[in-house]
Length: 76
Image (tube, rainbow, N blue to C red; front, side, top):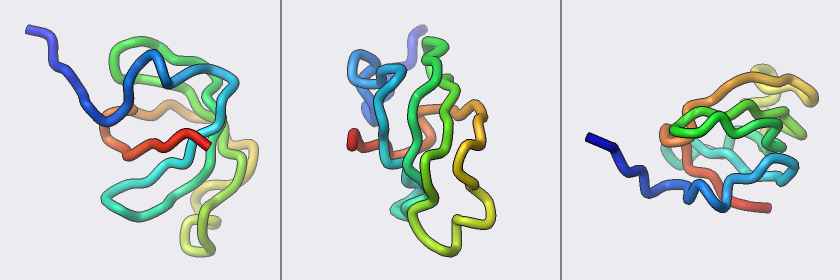
């Protein structure tokens, strides 16, 4: 059984493009997609934290994998 996620359309989540990433309504960071692994996973690189509270966790240049369906992602 394939699970469909409605938060981010796969064709719109492209490497090289930037997105704002939020979790449960809280803005976390702006990131560039480094690689979309298919399914739910992607590698992102932080461009900037979106607020002072998240700046201590998300520093510019940090690269890590995220489970795309867990976040609200908006193209920049």
